[in-house]
Every structure is written in structure tokens, then in C-alpha cells.
Length: 298
Image (cartoon, rainbow, N blue to C red; front, side, top):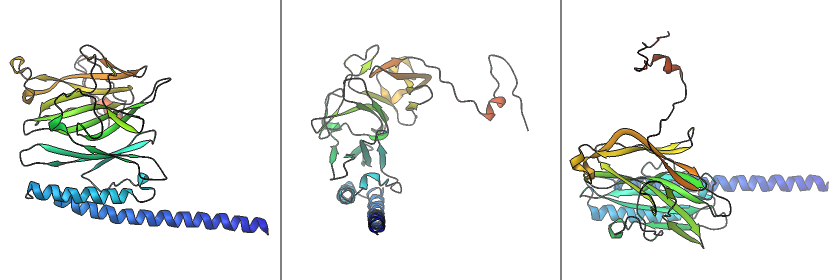
């Protein structure tokens, strides 16, 4: 009889937990719907900057209220298309980031780092201070953030040291150029730090982050290649040597460079050759070096 009561208590507890989780998710769904509507108003092109900032202020307050809900760390906000939410692979934290485009073609970035703390909401707000950061290589914190919209997190660990994280981010810049960023994030003493001299290579000594800048109409690849174990990126160059240093005339020159994580550091690799995984379309490709016609299979 005691065993039966014990199992009934366990089942009741599981049912209560499941019901509570469903209620929390339902409340977060309601928050997400509200955030979608506010984001739509914020991003309306006809909206004045004053109204955009006012709506974005409402967005921030609503988001914080949503994150106060129990188990909010596991809620993806995946219907909120204007915001990128990415978790660290080790589940320690996640980064929420977005931007507001201004009338002059520049951008203001917003974001937060949410720690995976089940007992309370532990949040580091990210305050975009791009305009006030005079030294792009400076080590900063969450209150003086070199704003970006992050889309990938790579944890890096080495024996005897706290891990740090490589963040890959897009940074719309002006009407003429776009930037992408390799940012370094670390935690210590309950603080957030951006920037760390972990890059090895020619002219990289003392670099705390890597910033790429190129013509706005062009695109640039910056991503991880898990098969090769590399962070790969297009090599940028001016369209004409006389345009060196004028980034509105920069684009990919067709070469690919990379960073390889070795011993807890990012080692520069120049002109890497990436191999694609074999697939059924390979038979249709004619290798110019071999002067072989593609074989079509039907």
C-alpha cells in the first residue's frame, strides 16, 4: 500500500510539473505574439526614428518580462524573425541580438546575454557604444559593446583555463559598407568581457577582435566549416590597388582564409582549399584541369 501511495505521489508530481511547463510555454507564446507586433511597428520604414526608438523601448521591456518566466532559457522565440537567438553549444548561455535601422542608413544594435540559471533570471544587457568606441581593438564589457547581430558561437577551451567563446556577427554599418565581426566573449567574476588577444598570425599580434569591412552591395562568407575544423572567411581586397584602405571598394577576391583552433588559440591559415562532401551532383561537374566532359546519368 505504501508503495502504491509513493508511486501515485510521483505521478502527481510529474503531472504538476508537466502542467506547469505547458502553462509557462503558453504565457511565453503570448509574449512572443506581443513582441512580433511591436517589432513590426518598430521596423516600419515610414516610422520616424523617435517612434522607432519608442517602440523598441517597449520591445525591450516586454522581452525582459518574458525572460522572467520560469524556463524561459529554453524558449526559442523562433517566430520572432527580426531577432537572432543562439545558444552556446555547452548550454551555458545564449545571446539575443537585433538592430534598428536609422534614417541615415546606419544601425543601432540591441541585445542581451541570458545565462542558463534555473533559479533566477541572470541577464547581461548589451549596450551598443559603437559611436563612442574610438579604438576598435579595445577590450570592453556589456556596457560598452561593439554592437552586432550574432549568428554563431564557438566555445574554445584549453587545460587549466576558463573557456572563452568566439562569436561570429553581422554588422550593417553605413549606406556604403557592411562589416562582419569575429568577437571574443569571456566570463569572470560575474562580469562579461569582449575582446581577447587569442589570434596568431602575421600582423595579428595583440588583436582582440577581427573586423571585416566591405562594399555594402557585396556579400562575404564568415562561418565555421565543421568538416575542416575551421572558421573560414572570404579574403577581402580592393577592386583596384589604388583603392586600398577605402572599404567601400572592397570585396572578395575569390580566395578563402581561415582560423584553426590549436591549443586554445586561433591560428591564421592563408588560402585554404575547402573540400565539399561528395554528392550525386559531382558526376555533372567537368574539371577544367582534366578537360573531361560531365557524365549525365538519368
